Image 1 (cartoon, rainbow, N blue to C red):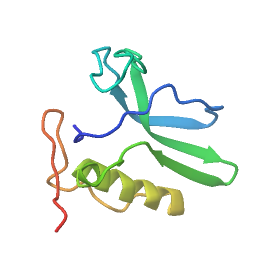
Image 2 (image 1 turned 135 degrees about the vertical axis):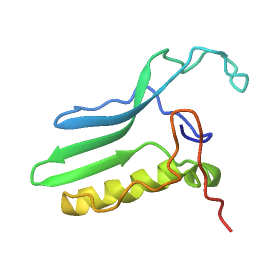
Image 3 (image 1 turned 90 degrees about the vertical axis):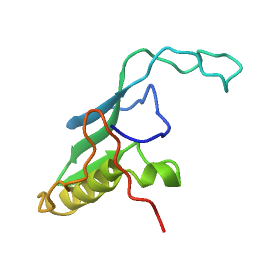
Length: 112
């Protein structure tokens, strides 16, 4: 689980040498904040975390973390740190923290 955040939908690109690591479901429920209440809703899973091999380089892309409260999510913090480490070194040395979110619970570390 991830805390409240924006969900990017209908991402475009060549999608070559890409591995989708995580998705989020874009429900078809109405969005009360938009004039067209169903604008932007796809009813499908949208990619959130991706790893891309690019020539001899590596790219980690995260579509998470649009607000301060969404960056407090332990899932965001952990995936950003591990993704940056992988992009820089090709390895993971950081373990998953004990407070990592589960399938049913969000975990946050409040900023001070």
